[in-house]
Amino acid sequence: MNEYIDRLVAAHNSSFPGAAHPRVFSCPGRINLIGEHVDYNGGHVFPAAIDRAVYLCVSENASGLFRFHDAGFQDSGELPLSLFREGIEVPRVWLYPAGALAALRADWDRGFDLSYLSTIPVGAGVSSSAAITTVTLFAMAKTLGMELDGIELARMGQRVEREYAGVACGIMDQFAVIHGRKDSAILLDTRDLSYEYLYIDPSRVRFVLVNSGVRHSLRESGYNDRRMECESALALLRGLGAKIDHLCDLSPVDFMPLGPSLPPLELRRARHAITENARTLEFLRRMRSGDFSAAGELLYASHASLRDDFEVSIDQMDRLVEWAGGVEGAYGSRMMGGGFGGCTVTMVDAPSAGRFAAEIALKFQEEYGAPPGVLECAIGDGVSELIR
Ligand code: GLA
Image 1 (cartoon, rainbow, N blue to C red):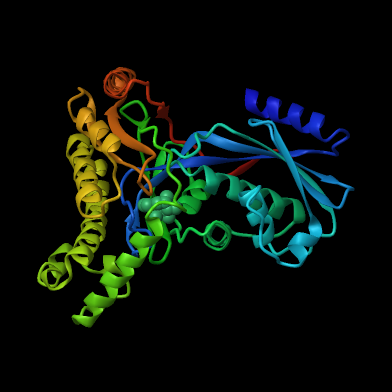
Image 2 (image 1 turned 135 degrees about the vertical axis):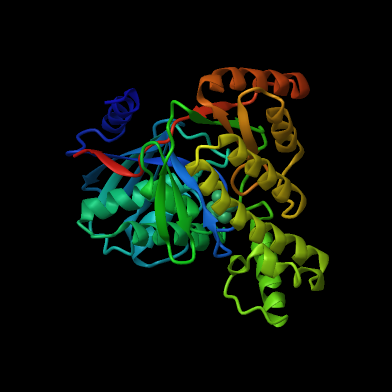
């Protein structure tokens, strides 16, 4: 039992005195090794769940309300059940829990108390929103006895982002936090959601996240713009005769003769998606063969493509990646997630992880005057029930 669960259950009992039989669930955040901005272009992504999670304690109440408590921020709120029956607009307060409750489209006839405690940094690009949404969906589905498989759950979580949070995201984050497995990354084909695990020996390779300190919000960032630009590139390529349903259906070789006919912006967006998909598959091959240095080179190449062609990086992340390249033990580094802030992910030789983290933090402090958040994360399991 970990200390967070004890803290959460204590907070739940004091916020909701007399709570009957609380159940406790958890859902991790995720990293993505490579395959960025391709999950809505029919490409391959390579995420993994991490050992940081949102914990949720649930119990039934007799008040006819959903009552919420955030044990980390000491914040509380409540929403009437009728709100969810009428299907009216989900309020922006408690957006993700409320969005999940609305997405379940259950016939709510009793209220519930839900307490949350998160160890996932917010705005760092490690999918804290997918974790909150997924743990709520998973917990309430279990509590109501609804049978939902992992893919239905992931699609429901994606709908919450799209319909209630206004982010036209792909399915990577939700998929990863549900299907995560200890010490394994997930190679997911987003065209048909087939996937395979790659075991990553934690005594050989670790992943270190360094936060740029710029809090990103996909809603306000250019995320939806990028999606539209990719759609425009796809339509133009089809107009040029490409028989494809997604950008990533094209190989870099097939794209070569078509690219120059695209306007410069669409050329850059399409080139990123198509080469990133190829890099992701090549990364799997190099990791399998145990050539971590060669695999790491693809992380640097992914960063360059996200910076130059997809234009979602920022200065701080470019600097962090550049510095990582000069630190001994770093195999490769790149910005991670949607971009416009958040963190970089660096693959490092496991025994060097601590030293890498210290060195990069020092460089950041010297340049920007404040230490960055650094997270040496381990790869963990997906959403689960902890106490019943
Ligand atoms: C965010 C989205 C994902 C994915 C990444 C970029 O995390 O939620 O669906 O598109 O950005 O790879």
